[in-house]
Image 1 (spheres, rainbow, N blue to C red):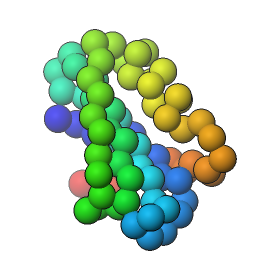
Image 2: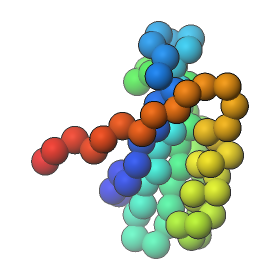
Image 3: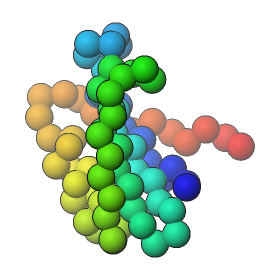
Image 4: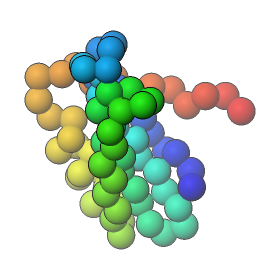
Length: 75
């Protein structure tokens, strides 16, 4: 599975931090919505197309938070 994008709401701490990840595995697209940092609780969604996955990501990024895209780590 390859991680394509990662967004963070810019807040620190287990109660405030939120992350959204977009990943692809062959022809299946996966979106993870995580609350509470690395040890937090995640919800997973699976999609048949990239467009459907991006629609879900856009919906998750709405609201009062200031979302930032985090750069991919160099290999």
